Structures are given as C-alpha cells and as structure tokens.
Amino acid sequence: MVVTTGGNQAGDRYTEAGSAQTWLVDHGVPAAAVVAVPTGGNTIDSLVPVAALAQGSGWQQGVLVVSDPWHVYRVRTMADDLGLRVAGASPTRTGPSTGDLGREVSYVVRETAGVLVQAAGVSVP
Image 1 (cartoon, rainbow, N blue to C red):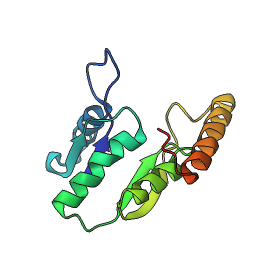
Image 2: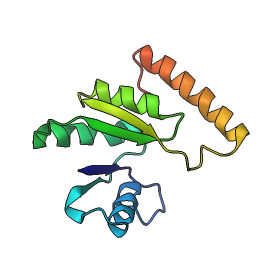
Image 3: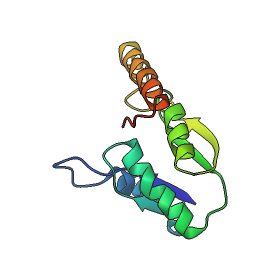
C-alpha cells in the first residue's frame, strides 16, 4: 500500500497527492495499492489524515516515510508523534532541495530549526 500526500496551492489544478498517485500508477504500481490523501498545505496537515486513515483502516504494518534528505527526519518524528508505527525513512535524492549547495544549506538550516522547535512542543509545517 502506498499513501501519497499533499494538497494544492491557490491556482493549482492538481494536488501533490493526486499527481504522485497518477505517476505511480502510470509507472506500474497497481491502482488499488495507491491511496491519495489530497489535503494539507504542510507536512503535519498532510500527516494527520494519514494517521486517521491508518487507525480507521486498522493498518498494523509499519510505514516507510519518503521525503527530501533534509526533511525526512522531521517527517519521521511527526509521523511517530501521530501514532504511526514508522518502520523506516527513505530520503529521495532528486527534487528541489538537492543538487544546489546554497539551496541545500538553506534546507539544512530550516530543518534544524524545525526539529528544535518541534522538540520544544511547537508544531512547524
């Protein structure tokens, strides 16, 4: 089972979750194995309905979270905090946060601050 997440921004025709679902099915993942959760404008707002779906569906398996290398640790801790049994994390090596040193540094600073704030009990998208 693959769960894709992410809403859309004002003016977008598609959601991040829906686009990911389409891509996966187009690349051979059976449609019945992909569930799109097309809500949320940030990570926590996307994960809350996933946790509710997992609980309501009685899923017992652990989840593997996938995100960019700088964000994956925080996604994992958010999922864990929401009661999802996190079996592992897999950072993607492609995307807007990789390949450019200046951009990578800014993501590392942002995620470091996010982890510190989250550890203090404040939710950061």
